[in-house]
Length: 150
Length: 143
Image 1 (tube, rainbow over the protein chains, first blue to last red):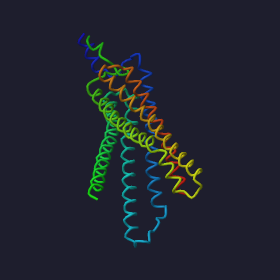
Image 2 (spheres, rainbow over the protein chains, first blue to last red):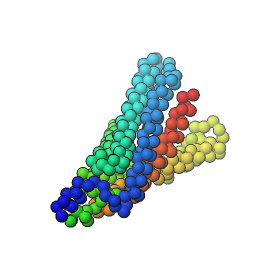
Image 3 (cartoon, chains in turn blue, yellow):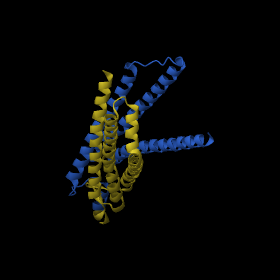
Image 4 (cartoon, chains in turn yellow, brown):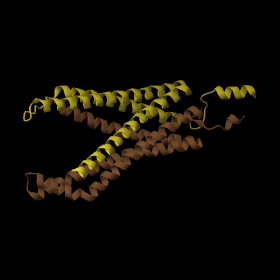
C-alpha cells in the first residue's frame, strides 16, 4: 500500500480519460501563443523601422523647438512600444516552449513554470491597464479642475 | 488510497502550485476583460448619446456637400462601432476562459480547465488575426 501511495504521489502523469484531449488543447494553445508572440515581435520591429525610415515633418511656424519636442515624444513612444512588445514576446514565447516541453516530457513542475509565464504576461497587461486608468482619471480631474478655475 | 480520488489535470495532479498559477491567470485575465468591457461600455454610451452629433460635425468640417459628408461621418461612426464589437467579442473569450479557470480551481473540474484552455486558444487566434492586420498595415506604411 505504502509503495502504491509513494508511486502515486511521485507519478506526475497517469493515463487519465481526458489525457489526450487536454494535452492537445494545451499544445494547440502553446502553438498559437508562439505565433502570436512572434507576430508581436515583428510588429515591434516594424514600428521601430517605420520610425527611422519615415521622414519627420519639420514644423517651421514656431521655430525648431516644437519640432524637436514632437520627435522626442515620438521616439519615446516608439521605444516604449518596442520594449513592451519584446517583454510580451519573452513571456509568451517562454510559456509556449515550457508548456510544450512539459507535455512532451510529462513534467509537472515545467507546466507550473509555463503557467507562471502566462500569468506574468497577464499581470503586466493588468498593471499597465491600472497605470493607464490612473493617468486617465488624473488627467480627467486636472482638465475638470482647469475648466472650473477658468 | 485517498490519492486515487484526487482531482487530476489531464492525468497530472491538480496540486496547490498548479492551482495558484491558474488562479493568478484567471484573476488577471478577469481584471483585463472587465476593464475592456467597461471601456467599451463608455465608448458605446458616447456613440449612442452623441454619434449623430459627431457625424454632423464631421460633415461641417469636410469640404464635400452636407449630405455626403454626413454619410461619410455616419460610415466612420459605424466602422468605429464595428471595431468596438470585434474588441468585445475578442475579450469575451478571455473573460470566458477566466471564468472557467476559476471554476476549475475552485472545484478541481478538469473539464472546465480544458474548456478554459480552448476559450483562451480562441482569444489568441483572434489576436493572431488582428496582429497580422497590424503587421500588414505597418509594412504598407513603410513603402
